[in-house]
View 1 (cartoon, rainbow, N blue to C red):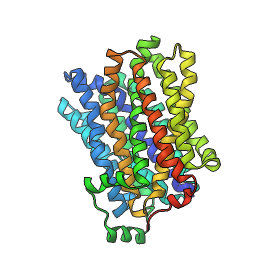
View 2: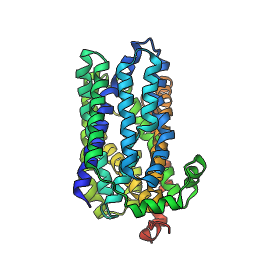
View 3: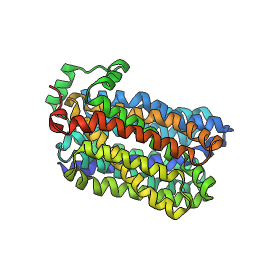
Length: 401
């Protein structure tokens, strides 16, 4: 495992997510300055995820063919342009343009994950990907707080600050991040030329090993996104928490996530197989969401959030680690991009589903739906991932070709 490169990519992802965290909580208020209705605000937030749904698999495939570094440079340049448009925006359509541009070309997390797979062996891969998750969590802990402080000077200021961070990232990648794919690997990928189209990407869902892992990613992402996107309203309606208290609880969740993915993942993957971790985490997530549905007070909530953070950290890391081992080297970027796209698909729909359940059923409903979905997923994982992998795990995880 190349520690210096790992540190470089950790810093890049951290700065990238720090910039994203700066502006994300402020977008609704920024949009309202241009007369946006609640519906348009929802569409603005969803537009970035919808654009990333299209862009992430394509960026991943391109990184398989041309290398991780040039795609990261192009992606971060797009993020920089998006933040500048956001800062200079004088109309609502410019906000939409900024978020769509960043989602379509700027969504580079799957490329960063592919870079990690290039510089780690199979034994250390989950640990390396866990550090990406830790960088992700740290960015979201610091970013919103910093963005809120800067917003006192106007909503454009956090956008320009995020642009400055993107420029810093672009400089770092250009000057200090070497390419992780060798010339021979890129030549091989070019000769094999994996297709970049929807049909070839969706075909992955029907593959024996990759398909069950991607199905797991999809249903876990929906259940977890349901929890994340509705949490603030849940905290207000069920526990009567104000914005400040909710922010502190979310900071606590972020810290738990950093500890799980940055510290615990290495130890867990050394002791347990990845299929066993995936199965255990789905069971834990189901129980956690069920307990969350009927949490009576803040103290109980803080306890319930521990298994939820642990299960979420395990699944976010180990699913992608298993995917990277189940495909040929020239498919890793595209496959991780598809995994990211499926996650973004759930973020387009989960806020609406969660809001409807909260309004028309009760505060318990989103948690109950998520728990039921994860209980079904645990059964699916047992049948299609854990049981088949258990006797010959290494054989099933050997890349084709």
